[in-house]
Image 1 (cartoon, rainbow, N blue to C red):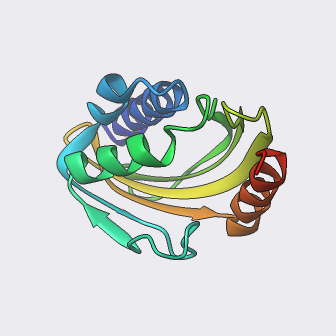
Image 2 (image 1 turned 30 degrees about the horizontal axis):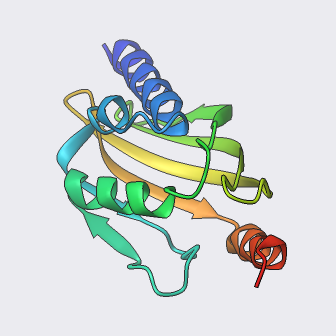
Amino acid sequence: MSQQLRERNRAVFLQMMNALGRKDWDAGFACMTEDVYCDWPYRPIPDMDEAMIGRDVVRAFFDAGQAAMAGLNYSVDQIYDLVDPEALISEYHSDSRHLATGVAYSNRYLGILRFREGKVCYWREYINPLAIRDMFERVAAATPP
């Protein structure tokens, strides 16, 4: 039974990352519970909330935060199974570009996820905030005054 849960949760995670990477919000957020809890211990944007609760709140954050970007095109590098089949850790990366300037953006992530009834209910993401700052600086330099 626990192996079936692991396989189901891996599939949900991969489906979610694939959809979110393409900015297919409907399919990506369908993989999360209504009360999903997301947090970023190292906030990628200084004035953002450290944690967000609720699928609609997280979706609005993704939609606004990625409006100027092509899809993040996530690639999952590794998934680590845990003793608890309702949890996993994953390493993944993104490759994208800023739409108006063409400035490239890529980042690496470590996600800790928990699942409930086949959906993501908890997502903690460690992200390199310096990669985001660097991209914003390059976008500013590429934007005419």
